[in-house]
Image (cartoon, rainbow, N blue to C red; front, side, top):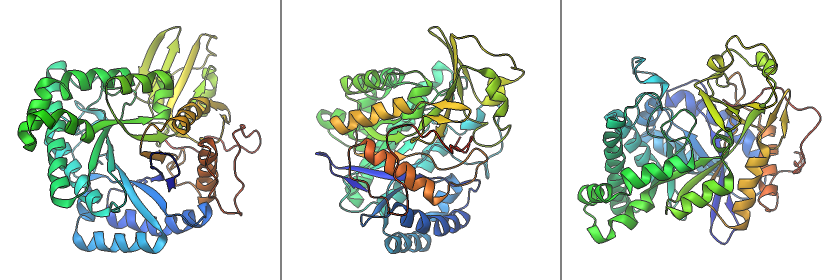
Length: 420
């Protein structure tokens, strides 16, 4: 959906693969879900989509016949793809490796580079001609505890190689694709401040710009500006909230450093001061795999997942300790019983964007429930309507779906039916 800001912004819905790595299974799910979502959201405007494509699905979709069939489907359903989610490589065909963690392979590994190259090739084919650029959000380099400082330059070189490939796609296909590193709890880059440091020291540094210029063939005098149009960040509002990061501070730091926000993922995290409530969390599924950050005073303590964070914890916590879970809770709710959400942080980012656009791409990231099932179409419409209202835009939801207001919903809130 194209929003009526001074700078054109595309607002879309993120669609996850939900337990499959293959394109035929994923496409079958899309054929079932997209028409229902399209009807529920309503309106005459095309519906924007951001697809999560694991590696196997990406390589299978790049087959010309599969791409043509998918493009035909998008046209029939009144949808378009402007962004891809490239964080999750997928497990099929990759043996587990405890040294790397669940982010394997990360940006140290050429397989991550090859996979993201294919995503760029796909997006160059799917991106409508009137959309200025396409975006791919990706892993924030590597797991925080899995990468040594002496390995960071190798990961940066792969990112710069990928940026050089994007210049080639632009020259040959006429499509501008941008890569957006997504700061995430427990990754090397967790906050806007850490993103600024990484870009300054490794990507936008004189050495990084020179490497990009040599790989892309772009004149040295133009290389810095060109690189900034291909490599930026994706801000996930639930991740920023989980890290207790001020939206205003995050945006100001990125803008001051000249780092473009290529994509804004609209989501909320869970929060609580009562550790006893954590016994109600599911022991498996996407929510169970979500990172957790505990704050006591000014100190932050990170956990890779809810099982690690709350193992053996039964007593109520004291007032100065708060837990935040980096999942994708419904943005229209200030509470998901028995937890609160970080809706206020999400709303602050949206208000900032309405006042002064932060990015050209926004994605509603709520696709899933605590046990891994897809959301019903009516839930998409409700969350979409709330987001549109928060942005000060006219609602596009159909008359059959009750539009949400900015007030917290107090009745009939679902319990832990949220994405991990």
